[in-house]
Length: 262
Image (cartoon, rainbow, N blue to C red; front, side, top):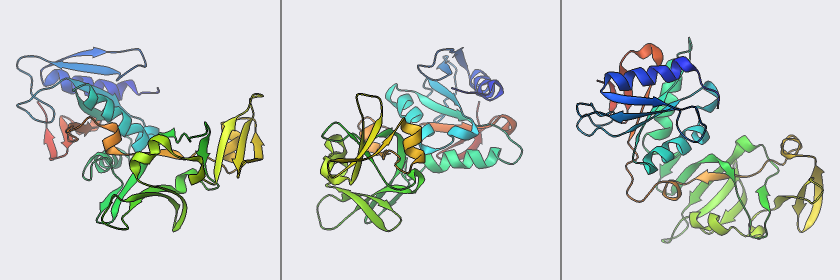
């Protein structure tokens, strides 16, 4: 993963100043740095409740739901607070900080939450189907939007839409765990010869040499929506995050606002 050392090091410095011991990690199996509180440490999210901190430096390219939310979920699952550090580019530092706060703030890790149901961010994973294929769509990936629609007093159904057009319907969000092939017009599989085959109605309609060619050919994989209850442990505290930037001094932005830390 690309990181800017100066961005990571700002997070390290803040944690050390607040009374943490920090270990910088070189492996790619977790956060680039982990901070462990000493006896006199000041907590990141709650000053009276210092927890281990996962330091997550970001680049402009991964300040988005599919880059932020999985990292935050990993920290929460490990009982850690999560400190995101964004670059201080000339015009973008504050904007990037606000983007992080918007994605992680209320409604936590949701694109929207209204009386008719929720709208979900698209995640990095694909949607597997009951026949061993994966869902794809004849639409730009950036235009695909998962949303709940309440039609009666029961659970909201889950719809995949492109603008006002509905292109797939599932009974509810839990149906994603075993989505039927019938719910999607298009799907794809990797054939024995390595080709990616796009199917519709049981027939192969397109073949591509790889996933990049398939996307360029107009059949991107359908992204799995980021559904909070599928990601976070039960009763998890979704406010255990903060974001800062190198030219912000000791200031960190949390779910409760901007303040100096330490």
